[in-house]
Image (cartoon, rainbow, N blue to C red; front, side):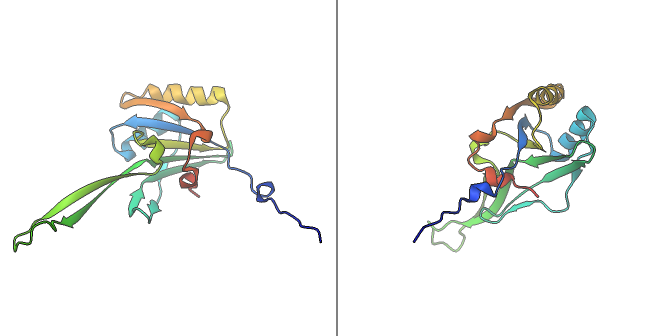
Length: 162
């Protein structure tokens, strides 16, 4: 009897996108405003954040669908700080303290130093991506920005935003 093998890679096409890592210390809404101004975008805050139930972390997301160029732009926060109270189990005292503990979670852990990620669906040409990077780097509040290769991402599934 013949054995048939079904290869799922034939059915699923990987999503093509460009990803830019942005280092800056300003709030997400302020960066979205500055990107809208510099790149002539219309990023708006989404009603629901990206919810990572494993870490109990929420990451803010801004989105704009450019129907003229068939692109979707997403600005996503890469860091989320979660504060929780932790009991001090070492002391068996009536007055043991509940000390707050802050944990920082990252949407893309291999780029933990990146504050924000700008994802552009329908991969940009190299020249267009360089033009976008130049515009972002001209923003005074942005420390640095650079292109992230799709092949270098281990947690690519975290960037499925739709």
